[in-house]
Image (cartoon, rainbow, N blue to C red; front, side):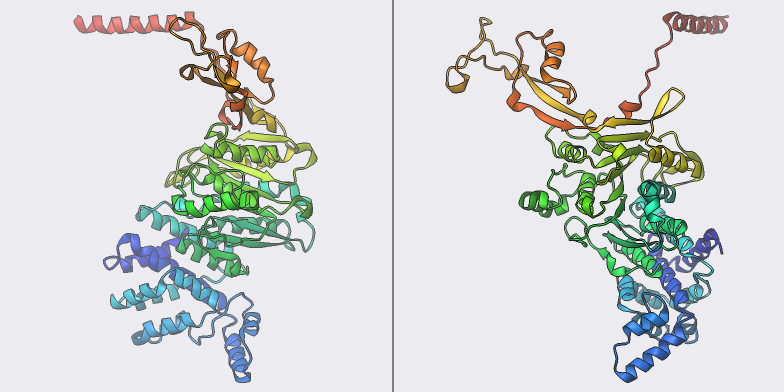
Length: 580
């Protein structure tokens, strides 16, 4: 059964719900039932063996859990003699039996259904006389891993979430990232480590602090399995949305991951992995989301713990928490002497340049660049994500840069790498083809500058190229007679006093001497000006688009004039035609 057919089948359940449920509520029933049927199918083969083992260990008075997990061959089990097919045999007691069946699952699975608030939906369906019909519909679909593999199942979950998000006017993009964007990020993350990852029995950790339904973790796992079936990626994540968390946890459960590594809650105010460091990290945090709700905890950590906490370098403005995710990930990097880390994060344009010298944003960029953590930024096409058409950028950071990358940053403009989708999905109208992903990965992997015709698409810079000093230029205060006012007390005695209304600032690149710049750019226009060195601040910004701008000279004036004359003659002829 292919993904579309499966989604269509599951969607047909919506027809049963129509009338008793609003469209925006369909997901509350269909998502948990899909998860339940999947788990039901996964445990089908081992069911009898698990029940026999359970009875045996209970008789012996031994804790059955480790034995049951072994018999089930999964990281979960169910000790109820019921399953969805058997529930069909007793229509009158469907509700009690379904509750009893759910209660038979191991604790990690019960938590999933609690996050879905599934018991409330079962009660509601029973009152509407729909519970048996809906359960029967799901009992008919075969979601066994041999029929629907984990990758396909992940896509089915995403498809369903997207549909429910669309009809309830939510933003689907809050829940997941387009698969081809994740594939690109995973390629960029692993390409420099291909040799290490090819070794048999290699084990690595990966973490996503805004895990959504777990798509990023899944694609990373699939990549590694494809390249080295003997390698193992242990997955960690945290998610704030209860339904996304439940689906992510169910997905990890089926993949045999330890679901205790997937934590529910707010990553900023309640870090679910406080002392852990990871080999790899991936994240697509929500764009431009304010952090007012957790401001108190974040400011407290910043002020009291400084660089021992996560937010030492600085805090961005409250209206956009993107850079807090960046700092959070930096704090989770394994120290370089223990093998180091690499991570990829999707951000919108504002973290590149928002905030002047000395601001929280600039100080965060300064920390990243002066500590040589930034490897590359890749500009993606617009209309790539489900909930926004704006420009987005993948930042790749590492604390174990290879020698030839040290002190340098690569910018890749991939905004022209796209193909039109056959059918738009929300705001997503464009996608990356396999060839586009391969080309971006090649440019990054080979660390080269490249052009497409006249237009550059890959450029390499020194870290310091993005730094500047903001100098304060003062002009003297003058009295009514035009005489310069001098200070009368203390350090200012005998010195010209500044006129605050004429005060100005200039940004001088770090690579240039301030005095040389001042003599060339300021002195010719204001011979009486001076620099107040006490006010000088260092700032960093990454003007991405400016680095790829290609100047095209305007056409010669004679050509433009000829065009205008032609146009005028045409208008004249039309007017004459009307008056005739």
